[in-house]
Image (tube, rainbow, N blue to C red; front, top):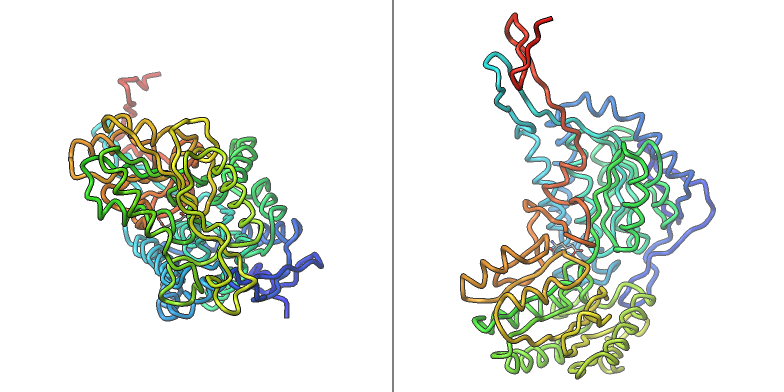
Length: 499
Ligand code: UN1
């Protein structure tokens, strides 16, 4: 059987004949065969979303949110089962697969719960008998392009608030995780969301590109690679009426100062570098450690990196699962090779796992283990400036004060996430005020954001926030509404209306 697209309230065959498979990254098993959407399928979905706008916007925010509450319960009731689906399709260890589903329902809860909150501002007017307001209106049709690494949570980051606010959506799931896409579309269908309000087209970059450049798309929400995100932002910039919020990668750093609690430092660094096999846009690939505790930190970090279990992700004991696909393993290996050239020392090299490390029956998985190296700091090194998106991490020793550490921390083209580990409030405050990242943590890993905070980056990490609470800015228009309650016309800035 071949899975279809969901357009205008129906499961439909697409225009094309090509199909693609979803594969389990841990063993190569085929999980399902999906129709590959064409630009014509995307156009049909956009037309349906455009037609559905008026009826959807005639409902109150609270009634729109009711559909999402159904999905919230479904996500919770099926937590274990859906966590396993995530793990099978994107290879994340099961605790992370389940956390992906948890994050999805938290986002839905945030958006649907927010439906009863006022969504504008009452603003004071300069003139006593005038009322002034900022009102929010939906932008229209929102196009959503989501990545494979959070295949359940990130679609809800994009869509939950957009729908409650009264937009209709056209969504393309990542081509690596179409099964998660299928299940989410089934949830919307089962919730009885009105025809055309939610549409899903499975497919690749050509389908995504049509979402981005189509005239009837009002906002594009994109989470994914820096290369594609830049292309999205460039295309949308050609159309002044359109808006894009993009969140891309990072080359995230953790600063460990001479005042750090070493247990917290090691724990935070291990979690940030190796959880989800380093395949988070917020994973850390640079550990910037003060010379006073460098040797001890290094010894403890290396010991763990040597021994963490890279194993079957469905096994609760597994620390790290496989990489998403063979091409991604090759990319990680290429960067490991670059680092071998550039590093002072390679400290851990589990690039190729031994036969005894690969779990039985998983020989066709995309296995790659931790790679840890130390460099003499040089901002021109590719290994410490380009994003790898894998368990590849550099140790950088610094001497001097927090100012120097933060200078190194900020010295990349990206600005997504980072952390400082220190017991000294002056150092922490300095980091907080000067770190050029959208997500900054103190005495914590730089992964694990909460949905009620903004999630997005500076510099090449993105423009806007296609996620969590801040998505409202991208999916609503703001109008300034001013009402005169007197019989005279009095204007702002002391202007006279005398003719
Ligand atoms: C990502 O890094 O691709 O902050 C998303 C976290 C998760 C989301 C990560 N809540 O780690």
